[in-house]
Image (cartoon, rainbow, N blue to C red; front, side, top):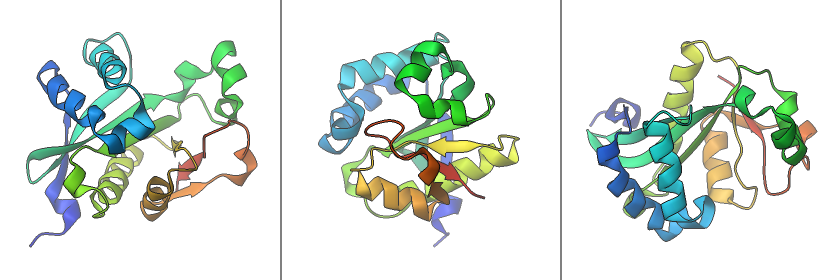
Length: 173
C-alpha cells in the first residue's frame, strides 16, 4: 500500500460541496470546535463566491473527500478592530498565512490522516513561497495540538496568553 502522503490530495471547494460541508460541520467532533454548521457553511460560501479571500479545500484520500482545510491571509486581519481582539496578529508579517482544518468523516478521526494532510498542505504552501505559516487551535483541543506538533508546528511561547482560547503555533519545515 502507498504511504498516506501519496494518497492525500486537495481539491478547491465548489458550491456543489457545500451540502457535504454542512453535514461535516454538524458532526459533534467538528461542531465542538467550529461552531454553528449553517454559519460555517455561509462563511465557506462567501469564500467560494469571492466575498472572502480565504482559500477553502476538501482533503481527499484516494480521491474521496474526507475533510476540510483552508488558508487565510493574516495581513487582511491586521486591522485595528482585529488587533484589539487578537493582539497576536501583530507579531507576524502581513504576508503570513493561517491554516484551519478538520477531518469530516468521523471514522477517520485519530488515524493520522489529519496530521499527514496538514504537513503536506503546509509544505506545499511553504514551497510556493509562504515563509510564515501558523495555526491557532484552542489549547483545550489536545488531540489537534498533538496532531499539529506531529505535522511540524511548534507553539510560540512568547505569544502565550495574548488571546484567550488560542494557542499560536508556527510551521517549521
